[in-house]
Image (spheres, rainbow, N blue to C red):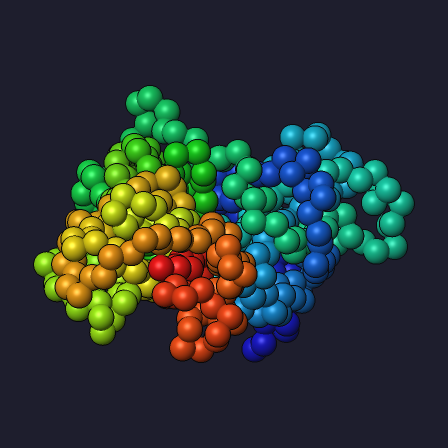
Length: 412
């Protein structure tokens, strides 16, 4: 028998049995959102369900199928809201609406929607439903599924799973990973075990809470730590008063960027009559993106580019019998690293009357070093030396003409 063929009376019994198995407080399943959080959020999809309709299970499944493949990619969240009639006391209607919303939320989770992408707004009463007698009892409760876009929606929601009360029996939650008290990584997979009756837990890292599913008492979810001590609490509730709880801390100490110069090697000897300049190569290893880096040549800093894979290379003119190099880098979170210093020896070094450097610190810029003497000679990218232009300065040479970095352009 297809789900859509379930008799209405049978569905009502099924819904009643299911709702009776929910925790004593409906808010213990999905975060309850302040309606003001929805202001300014773009609704990209909306569907209204009548919970007592035999088609509701198929409608929820169809909605989940259309959403689950794009939830993370398009930064989407599901917000559930229930409207009831105004008959009876407000507390009873609020409870009924919360139970219905949680039931629909669990149907969505069972059909592939991540539980940390679902939130609920408080139930509302609508007196106008009393005028729609021709539609019968089913019209008196409606659940709206709104799909909204906004990455900070649930992060701004207040945590709804409360700490266990004093004297309440608490089942343990065993943390399988991470087990360390200190770590140099920000991203971890939190894995653990809990009571088999606990199906949904709230995981709070510092002040950010999300809900996750537990299957057969086991759970796992990615977490992200911030530098310093991170307080983590996990709370779960199941039917018949089953409560699980644990709390612990992990200290995240981000490593400073590790930088090495791979070429040239320390102590290398270069004949500059054959190679007037060298290329300094190396790599930066960092947990977060490198925002700025400098090649320090003989204590003179020059900005360099670091590729996405952490490698770098920069040309440098050897100026003395012993030139020193080191690289310093700053990461996005403000951590700095410095490479060991290397020394390069030069042979065939001719005496230079003057050396001019041009560097800059803005990406996508190409500046040109142009040198003029008192006789009207000009050395530039068009006339770098006397071998290529009679207009250039005699005995002068543009050694490096950089066109795709931060310099240097060097004239000897």
